Image (cartoon, rainbow, N blue to C red):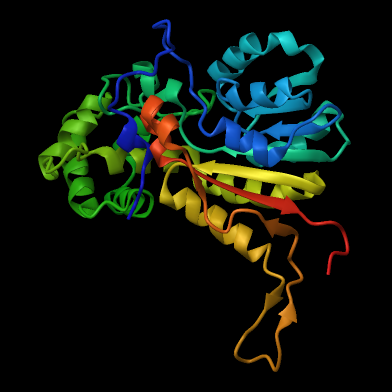
Length: 330
C-alpha cells in the first residue's frame, strides 16, 4: 500500500514555539547524527539541504558539510540559517544525482565521511501555495522543485496524451482510477486548460469522490510531482553515484516518505550488502561481487512518538543506513 508524505499535507503549516512559520522541520535529526557520527575533521554531504536542519546538527558536531539542493529557496534559507559556520559549510545548487560533479566543481578530492539524503518534497514547498504542490492550497499548478526547468505540472496535464497520464497516475501514485481520471482530464482541458491546483483537485474529486480522511486527489498530485521532477530516477542514480564518494567506514543515510522511494533504497542496500548469492542453477553459493555495504538497519527506523506528536509529518518517515565496507573485505 502506498504511503505518501502528501497524506500529511493538509495539516496546518509547521510553526516554531514562538509562532513563526518553519521553513522546513527536519525529521529524525538525532537518529541521523547518531548513525553518521560526525566529528571535527570529517566531511559530509547533505544531498537535500532543505532548510538546513540536518546540516546544522552535523556542523554543530564540528564536521564540514557540502549541502546540495535544486531549490533556490532552500539554498537561501540554509545559507542564512547556517552562516555562522563560515567556511565549514559550502552550498551548491545541484540535484543529488549530480553529487560527483558538484564535488569536482568545488575542487573537493577528499572522500566523504558520510552522506544524508532526505528525499521528497519539503515542508516549505507544501506550505507555499505559489509552489503548486499542495492540493489543499490554491496556487499555480507548478510542482517544480527546480524552478529553472521549463515544464510545469500544468504542462504535463494539458499536453500529455491520455495513456501517458494514466500511466503516471498508476505507476507513481498507484491510483486505482488512473484511466478514468486521465480520460476526464483530456475531455475537459480542451475547453479550459488546467491552471491551478484547485482546477485539478476538483476534476479528480468528480471522478473519485472522497470516502475517507484523505483527499481523493492525493495520489494524483503525488504522481505528477514524482514524474515531473524525476524523483525516483534521481534517487536510483544517486544510490549508484554517491557510494563511491564515501570513504571506507563512512555511512550513507537515506530518509524516505513513501513506499516507492523506500522500496528503491531497500533493494539497493540489500543487493549491495549481501555477502553471498545463491541461484538454483549454481552448484554452490558465490560471493557477491557488488557488495560494498554493511547494512546497519535491517528494518527501517521510524520517528519516535514524541517527534510525531510535535511534527505529524514525521509519521511517514523511514530511515535506512548502510556503512561502506573496508576495501578487500571478504
